[in-house]
Image (cartoon, rainbow, N blue to C red; front, side, top):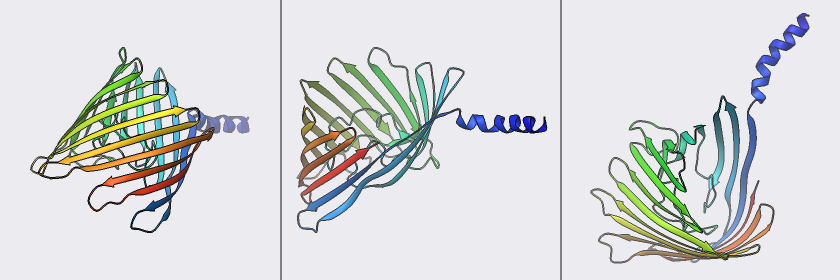
Length: 287
């Protein structure tokens, strides 16, 4: 009887450890980069493992994601640079705490389509708290903030944000705004796809307070044909008082080998002072 009682007591502590639904995902990416005027290099573009645990408690969903990110060179992954988060969901509303996407970061970034290089400049920052409101007829709203003092790793201090997106047949549009102690950022964009072709446009403005303001424009065009994805991405940044814009253009081809393995070639043409053109060949495996 004592053994039975001891086993029952032990089980009371062991069972909750298995109550949550635990999954492991991630990605690894290897690249070979050839940069004009410099030596070639082989890099780990992304080495990421994400452990996610989810549990249902009286109609409330509680989940956490623990991100182990080794590096983020030529980052184009979904997780790179993010820290751990804890989310509580109920009634279509989700509160996320930790190093999570701010309201502006939760929407847009439509023109960041290349597997390497490029990227829209005003896609928002990570905040400590984000609240996603219930979706209504394709309309989604996320609000966020970080306190003035120390926050979770990776979050932007003393900042607030809001992001609004609206999905329609074949596409989506968004507006985002973010403020911190000295700057105000806004961005908006739209994307539309049909018959394997997707086109996207974004525009953002950065009010830097006493510093020079900036404006960013992104454009992308992709065509998917079976397992092959062809694309071009153009990113422009204009700084007040500067006689010349900073322009980046990336053309790429990506081939899906099946399952979660992709190989790609991306060529960067750079019109940014001090930066060089580059070609990257990469292999990415997501699991």
